[in-house]
Length: 105
Image 1 (cartoon, rainbow, N blue to C red):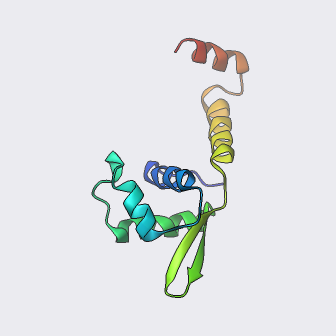
Image 2 (image 1 turned 90 degrees about the vertical axis):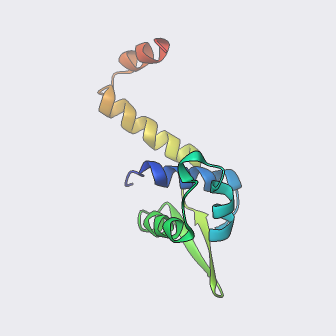
């Protein structure tokens, strides 16, 4: 799976919190309290939705003239993929180094 940008992650985290298929208007309402998303316009979010569809993180469902979006990957699965990437990229697959780093926090 392709990696997400930080902005795409913000949108996905919002989608996962909502726990249902969402519309553009419902995500706009939810992200307006997100500090990194305060100035987003619907067109901006719509563009990110398109990118998330292309990356196969969400599915677009047409309902008449409107669209809803459904996550295709769970937050838990995404976390697992990210942790696996971190583990292999930064710690060269060495569990002891990872554990020592976590213990140093």
